[in-house]
Image (cartoon, rainbow, N blue to C red):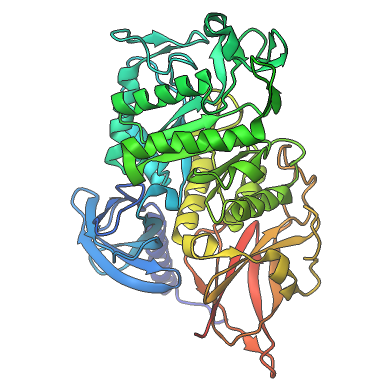
Length: 569
């Protein structure tokens, strides 16, 4: 190459340095956009809170699936802006938000994204979270609910808020109060959290146990218990609780339903969350008659639903915990608003999570499915794979709630702490879940058994049921769409979600995908929560001469890619 004169070389170096400096400066610009509520009811305006470091204007594109719905913009004042937009009244529907930070010349300095949805009520698409800290003097109710809304959590289980298992509210005038474990709690704190939750369209659900009572209460009512044998009641946690007989019409059932009514009359809770312990599964009442809890539980749930309906109407909710997936066949069809499963052995491998969601959705007649599978946030790869499988299957994962926390233990106060990177990752996951809920859960049903084999990837194994050394294919079918989720299980060191994942999946690239189809395909697009952008990407595909299959190249697969086929009407 011809050597440049020294003076010209100097000018070029100066220009390059200036250009580099501008580029480096641009990377320091930050942008964040969050909705002001966890969800929106039809006709309710959406407010997006924007904060930025630098720039003069923010421009927002609102999308539904792969289509643009609208664009709005606002000038930044002291690095902030509020954008208000009223979505169509169509419900239920999830929307994407892609924001760009601009300077005075229209140059893009930074980008950000979020999502929101329009629902008639929160249980149409529940994102269930938890709270477990109710100490007197807690003063972060507003900040807590702002954090929850950032992750689109629209229902919160208030875990172990109660005075006693058998007497849910503390004695009048006794606040703060001490629970059975000696924790100091405050109803004032509980009420402040409920009020702050409602301001963000977040439902507050009080934890209760269907048959737990203190030893002192049992001693006052010994004939209310559930017995292993005569005069020997079932106990839980040693000398902690005694198991009572929840058969509707029994003294204990009438008492507990009365407690539910009192809670709803004297607080602003939005329904009742009902727990059980997975055992016993049957017993004897005081008369010596056999009690089969698989039959008793759904009858009690229906009775509780009547109490909630009387006091909260259609806005109220009842959720029951099918511990270890038992007895899901009887409780899923009952009059509860979602099928909630706390996962234990033998459901220990990743694809078990898929099977649990699919079967619960079928048994519940299409009810939403909530999975409680406790994974410490330090196990990042395990969380990512578990969420990919649960979300791709049409379910949701109970894991977030207390700011910066993730459930890691069945006793909720023993939660784990997420670092900054994990919190950002979870925002991506929940933005993705809400943005694409109409092809992941709403308006779709599971079609994995019938359609997973229709998708093949050259030189990549996809068939089978195992949770390792393959790309799992999970399919959700809508009226005019099919969603093929690819979950990467290649190279993981163990197939169990309940164990630490030492090595995550081996990233795949340039995957040659072929899908057998029976209808003309109008459009194909894909999206993933794994990269920097969760926006939909158009796919160029070819169609076989007989129209029986399409083929295309998927650029990458880290943990989870979602491919959507839109069929011609």
